[in-house]
Length: 308
Ligand code: NDP
Image (tube, rainbow, N blue to C red; front, side, top):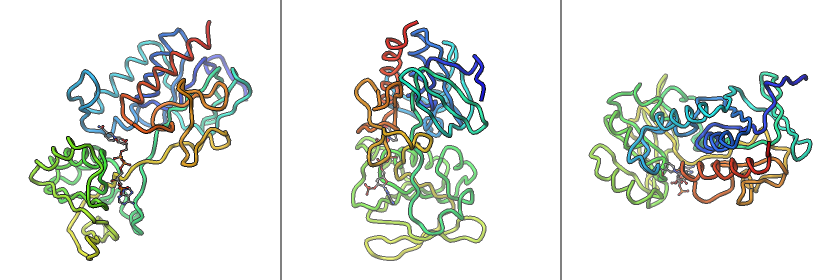
């Protein structure tokens, strides 16, 4: 497959969340020729987050607004946005790599930065797939407006579940949060905020086990403290954690046992010239600000390595 100059870059970044876009900004400011590839709307999980309250300098900003600001910043500095699905990456030597897209494009890069993030985990409810787009969704901000004033449920006890329940409570008639443990995992401030909202009710030691409804979700069966119960629910949002998106790099020896990418503090993987940043990287704190920090580090290191 021939490669034209338009598809040859110093740095190709796979993913356009806060990690990928910040890396684009730093590497572009370092005078490198940069492309970032994404198969969805740039911004990553920020685009599906209603409000963000812990991005330094912004007490409160909508997820889509911060995504747009980061995207425009990267584009303004000259980074190229390539829309596509990466299916494979190939490593020839430290400064020669190839990225293959589903649409048959082949892109050459001196370095590749993997910033592909994570996908939603699915709960083990046997008939959950039948209700996809019929009441079950993994994005409150995208789908809750279709179910205005109807009872809703969220599964999970982490930051995502609590944060999304706040926005959901402004749309749904009632929000039930199902937590399988006897306590929440979310940060205390978020839990306090949720407890103040009248139409949110938290069920601890509770797991949804079956869904009912002919065409649309109507009811769920759940087990609370060992007892079988039912609740009328029309829209359901599992927020039970995420899995790393890594399918295009499976052949490379860069992953830990859970599929996250191991790096050193310079974001370098075991394969020279391939970097990993953001949520796909093995790390303990996954926040927008830590993803952006990874991106800044990789951008700076790459600027020094690929001198013009
Ligand atoms: P987490 O992994 O932190 O939490 C997952 C939750 O889902 C836990 O309560 C877990 O329960 C529960 N769970 C997992 N599997 C199941 C299952 N099969 N059935 C029922 N419940 C289940 O995921 P989050 O998405 O909440 O957060 C991911 C990361 O993103 C975290 O680091 C978080 O801090 C960060 N984040 C930060 C935000 C912010 O600061 N604004 C917003 C959103 C996310 P158990 O404890 O029993 O395993």
